[in-house]
Image 1 (cartoon, helix red, strand yellow):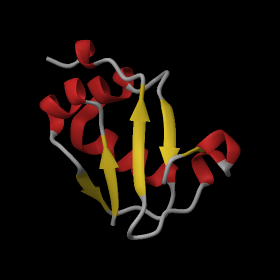
Image 2 (tube, helix red, strand yellow):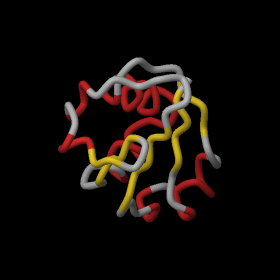
Image 3 (spheres, helix red, strand yellow):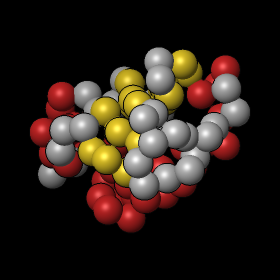
Image 4 (cartoon, helix red, strand yellow):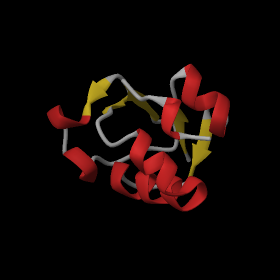
Length: 83
């Protein structure tokens, strides 16, 4: 399971350091959308996504593979869309 790390404002809404079962970044996002709905989708729309500290645009984008020990972080996320 990959560890999803969210900024403070968003993590206050959905939880700190969530463990998500996913083989790729795309699968992780799909799983988080299932759990938290369209509010999460809106909140991360323009986020920079890092896997183990590396921007996924420098890796394989949404196809970037995740290991059980991977850390996935969403940066520049606004929690204002979540209620």
